[in-house]
Image 1 (cartoon, helix red, strand yellow):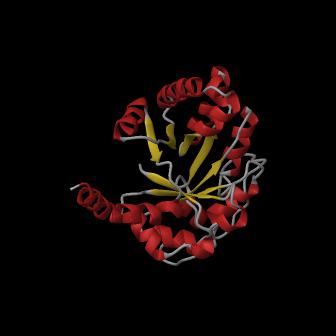
Image 2 (tube, rainbow, N blue to C red):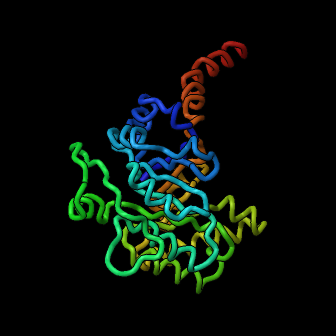
Length: 259
C-alpha cells in the first residue's frame, strides 16, 4: 500500500488535496501529530473527508500518549502510530491503549467506550453496536526507530509477538531516526532487513519511508515491506506538481538556447 506523511494543519486541509492523493494512488495518510502539535490532531470532519476518498487516516501521536490513541479512533482515525519505543512494556501499553472499544479481560491502558458515527450516519450508542463497528478495523502502527528495537534480536522478537497477537498491527520503520541515533546507516539497513524477515514469519506487516528510484522501492518490497511512503511531506505535493508541469517548458528552453 502507498501512503504519505501529512503535515498540513487541519484548518488548511482542502478537499482537493484529498482528491488528488486518492487519484494519485495513495491509500493511507499519516497525520503527524507527533511533531506538529494540535494542528495535526485531525478531528471528525477531516478524517471523514479522507475516508470519503478511500484514504485511511492514521493519527501519529507523541510517545507519551496513551488515552489519546483511543480518542483519535473515536474521532474517525482508522489507525494510530506510536513513535520512539524502547521497551517491551512500551509495546504492550500501546497495544492495550489501541484496544478500543475495551475487549475482554483486564486492560490497564485501554480507552473507555465512546460512541462513534458509522458510515450511514448512525451513532453507536450500545456496547454491541460499538464493538461491531470497531472490532478488528483499526490499525496499530508501532515505530521501530531505536537501537533497542532494531538491533536487540530478543527484544525485537518479543515486540513482534505482541503485535502479532493483536492482529491488525504493523511495525513501521523510522530509519532516519535510527541512523541519527546510532550513527551507522549501514547497520540500520541490515536491522531493517532482519526486522522484515522476522515480522513476515509472525504475520506482522512492515512499513516505512522509502526514497530513491523504483528499483529501491522494489528492493524493499522484496524484503517484505508492505506499507510504503515516499520521503515527501504532503505540503510539498503542490510544489512537486508545479515542477512537473513546468518541466516541459524548461526542457524546451534549454534546447532552444543551445541551438
